[in-house]
Structures are given as C-alpha cells and as structure tokens.
Length: 345
Ligand code: KG4
Ligand code: ZN
Image (tube, rainbow, N blue to C red):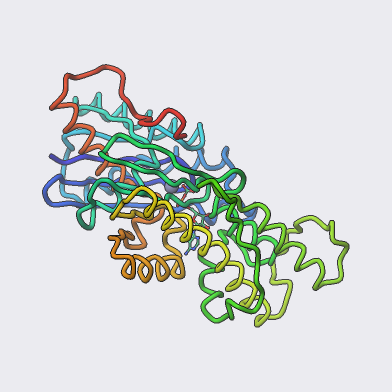
C-alpha cells in the first residue's frame, strides 16, 4: 500500500509517499522560512497563500520521486494548525482523492510527530511522547496507537516559541531554535544559571518566565530600564562570546526542564519507551541529554533523524497507514476520528 501524505499545518509545504513495507519513497518539503523571516514569526495569511502556490508542484514532485502515477490513499493533516494553511492541504487531498478515486484520511499533526519515529525503527507501546515544536509542548502517555492521555503541556509559551523569542531578544534572526543550538555549542552553559521552571506537583510546563528572565538579564546588562519590552533587532546586541554563553545557558534551562519532567513521568508510569518529536527534537543538546539519561535509566528513546523532526508529509502518511489498517479491521465509519484525544489540539 502506497500512501501520499500532505502536510500544510504551519510553514512547511510537504508531500511524501510512504509504502507500508518499504518505508519512505519520497519526502518533499518546501520551507517558507525566508518568507516569514522579515516578520520574525509565521504570518498566517502569507503561509496559506504560499501553500496554495506550492502544493501542486510539491505533490507532483513527491509522486515523481516515488515513481508512482497514483497512490492507494491520500492522507492530510487535519489539525491542529493554522486554519487557512490546513484548508489548503485538505482541499488538495480531497480533490486528489476524487480524481484518483481512492480513500482520503485526515490525521492529527501531533500524533504524526509520534509516528515519525516509526519511519526509522520500531516503537513499542506503552510509550511516553514529548512533542516539542513552535506551537506545542505536550507530554503524552499512550498504551496503544490512537489512544492518548495528555499528562502535561505548556501553560504559556511552547519550547520552540521560547527559542524563537529568545533569538528575537538577542537579535539573532528567525527561526531561533537552530541558531541558538549552533551558537550554544561554543558557549559555556554554566556561565549564567537561568531558572528551571519546574512547576512542582504537575507535569505541565511554563516557559514564558524563562524568556522574561533572559530579557531582564539583557536589560540589566545594557543598563536599560527593567521594564523595557522585547525589541526586534536584526543584529546581535552583545559581543559574540557573551551571546554564545547566553545561548548555551538559556538552552540548558529549556532542555533540563524538558528532560527532568519527561524522565519523572516515565518512571512514574513505568514506561520503557520515550519518543521525542517536533521541531525542537532536532536540538543537539536535547538529543545528547535524552540519549545519555535514557541509556543510564535503560529506557529506549526514539529521536528521529533531523529531516523527520520538523514538519513533513512522511509522518502524516505513516500515521495514516495505521488509521487505514484499523479501519479495515474495524467496521468502517463515516466520521474520521482525526483528533484522537478531545483536548489534544
Ligand atoms: O515542528 P515544527 O517544524 O513546526 C511546528 O509544528 O511548530 O517546529 C518548529 C520549531 C521552531 O520554533 C524552531 O525554532 C524549532 O522548532 N527548532 C529548534 C531546532 N530546529 C527547529 N529548536 C531548537 N533547536 C533546534 N535545532
Ligand atoms: Zn509540527
């Protein structure tokens, strides 16, 4: 069975073909980062227009690379995401489904990030998933595919958003995650001890205080009034050594918090498999920390290769393979349970 997966929930237009036996046959991703860079964030209206322009060539290229004329089914991201962007993917998928006369399946984007791990190896249930992206920071427990319990999530900024805002404060550019990751490698992570927002007694996260703490640090350092708000600067506001030390220390606080909470939850629920997914799972320090602590605790950890951490059509197609298989086994239903967990959006 060959599935075409379409992903347009945010700022990547992607289409991929996944074969249920042979894995990824193609995975075409067009990033809109250059388009949104001048605004230092995703502009929803620009995003949907760009998806509209690119969706047809991206699908065509994915089919061409996979060497197929038509797939056996089309899958698309149904949510969560930007409304206009999602709509472009949905309309494309439904149109193609009619033309090719094949099933069309809408799936959950966050569940897709979990199944990205399966494109490169087996994942065992029960599992604990940490989904960290520009819009989400969710800790999810699952005993079987399709059944999820959200144990905790961010109460304010998502981890990726925190990276992006920090880069804005420091005048480093957009998106902040990969830039801070790179600069942190040459910085001293112990030069400044930023607070770890643990929120005792809950598995929720909170990152907005950490961002404010960075802002106060900069205001103090530049002798600006403490209530000076984030200023957008297109060049670094401190010398390179200070910047890299700040990046390393700030990153350490984010990664430490994500790691501690996840390991605590894994022990609490007796889970031996962790999946880390979403754009922030591309972070080198986070990967290093998870790899080392999970080896120590004898917990299996799945960290996808970098191209599968950020949004892509392959993860959507892979998830759809499960949805289609369980639909074939169970009685077919008209309403697609695309959002598997009511509060998970
Ligand atoms: O999953 P994703 O591609 O899109 C959303 O669904 O949001 O994640 C994008 C986020 C951005 O906030 C970006 O800064 C962050 O992932 N990101 C990273 C890294 N690469 C991307 N954050 C930290 N380190 C990275 N290497
Ligand atoms: Zn995502």
